[in-house]
Length: 207
Image (cartoon, rainbow, N blue to C red; front, side):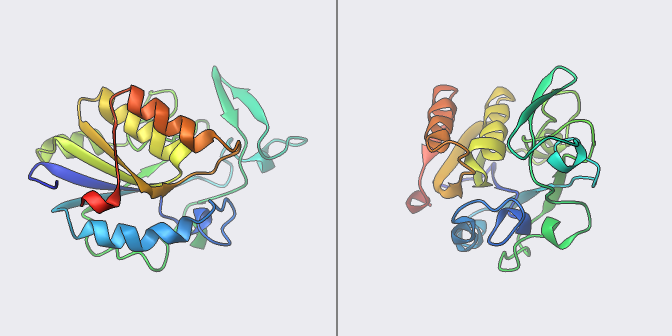
């Protein structure tokens, strides 16, 4: 199905989301070989990284008396409190060691403003600032984006929803994603929401 004007976007394939990471996503390591395989199918491959300062307000540790998975309001935005993760220039922020990074043309960093989280590869959670990914894809003549990575119910979902709204033909590779799943049904609901909004749900066997 791959053709010209397509890009693969690898979402947050970082140590802290993988085995023994501080915000481990179940079975995350299993998709790293899939990322390596898919990267060979595209002329343009981009990757994202969560890139948090240590005092980021999404960390429960920065809110005395609060616990991981509690929800607070920061400004006008509800924020789930997470364990410290993907802190800039730490081992946890690095790509999984088995990821073949050679095909990656460019890396986009998100979540570096301590006051607001950034699930999407394109915007912060309030859509106040951009990562630069959309402009880069337009400059490269990209029409179709194919997403995979971590985690289905957060960064993958919001990246896909923004991609559709930005006018890209958007595909999510279902079996090359894994979810945090704070609730058992979270990933299933995420795929349903993406599909309703125009994201095409595909499988790796189609590549």
